[in-house]
Image (cartoon, rainbow, N blue to C red):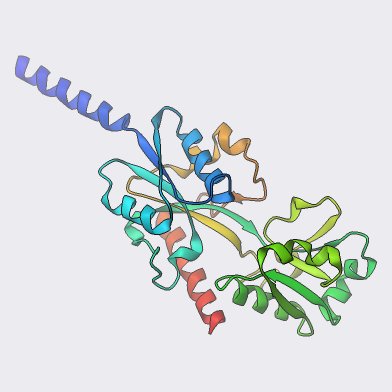
Amino acid sequence: MKKLFLILLVTLFSFNAIALEKINVIKHSRPGGLIDRLNVILAEALGERFGVFIEVANCVAAKKVMENSKQPVITAWPTERQFGGQPCTVDNKYFISTYSNSPYHITYFSSNEQAADINHLRTGDIKIGVWDSAFWYAPQKEFILSLNPNAKVIRYKSKPFRTALASGEIDYKMVSFPGEDSVIAIMDGESLLPEHKFSNMGYSLLLFGNINVNIESIYESDAWANRRDVTHQPWMRGQFKLYKLKEVERMLNEIGKASK
């Protein structure tokens, strides 16, 4: 009887130790930037289960931590890093869930009456600015030209991109964070071209790590409710893990086709 009691006690202790095991969060991006902020949300949402931040210089170092850590680790991971076997591409066995997505919007200044005309957007000889991204440019361009074959799509580096619309160089701007300026009006992709395969595409993040985490507990936390980046919404909420992974792979394949 004593032996049985000891076995039960050890089993219970081991179970509680596992249940209360701390989870570390890998920070691998610019401090204060979007990815960094979304990693802070993960840490805050974990509550008492949060261990420490593991700060590394870049995604390659973060990948090594994931692959070699004996402690539970998780991190917010930009979707594009899983494209095309890049140095930062992580094995899918570390995939936990989709995390957040901020769909792209076409924006224009509310004072621009011509830009506000949906027919002008669809048929006019317009100029639309997009961020100069090797990964996102091709699907953005395909969506825009499907909306209006007469459109001219112009790629911008970060600083000129911020000022191009205000300077009048372009009529519209395609962005993932449309709420940056109160004088900008918004048209979202799903309303403009709902059947297009890239209509709901935007800047997205995955949740990666070496331990299973219930993503719903993140979304239901105060940290998520009070997040600064409200344009980022739960991505594929309520779907099974395998379905989410297949959908991410499908999206990456579609972007790959568009890039050729």
